[in-house]
Length: 206
Ligand SMILES: Nc1ncnc2c1ncn2[C@@H]1O[C@H](COP(=O)(O)OP(=O)(O)O)[C@@H](O)[C@H]1O
Ligand SMILES: [Mg+2]
Image 1 (tube, rainbow, N blue to C red):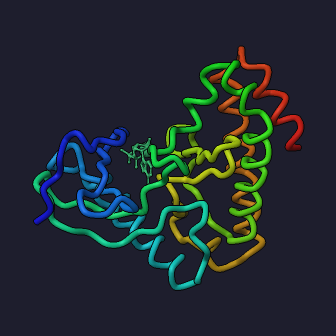
Image 2 (cartoon, helix red, strand yellow):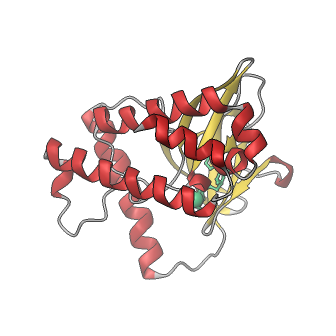
């Protein structure tokens, strides 16, 4: 069993806490905050796993999506193992929200954000990766010495359709990704209304 050290804490969402893997700096462990999940949460987590399996079978590249490496037992319960997204200096990459909550930070990272948001959209479209929803809390920004160079989606991928036909028909997948992306832009502009650098980025993207 893996013993999780609380000082290896990376981040927390509504359902899970994320820690660095104690024996592998490339990996992180996601554990559920609550030990009794609702039926809906269980279903969502199973769906996430099966979607990852599907992507692996399809042979997509995992450059902007951390690969999933199965589950293991830890001192905090069962954990799902994923690639940990880090900056080239070794620190854990920060979320997109961190860069968007301050116009100054967005402005400082303007070029990096513009090109990596554009790359992310093209990546989803070319690999036909369907997201249930795109949110700034679930996207992290990788930095090198010059700035942000790549984004990665760490949560909420998969298809919420009752019959997930878009997984198998490319033009339906593309249509869905375009729709989710539009909604994502709209939400960010609503949440960060004061951030005119962000508006400029989305204008330049379209
Ligand atoms: N693979 C990862 N690499 C780096 N940071 C991550 C990774 N996965 C999650 N995080 C961080 O942990 C936070 C919570 O993880 P997330 O998977 O979104 O949990 P939840 O399912 O509860 O929303 C994220 O907002 C992000 O800051
Ligand atoms: Mg999340």
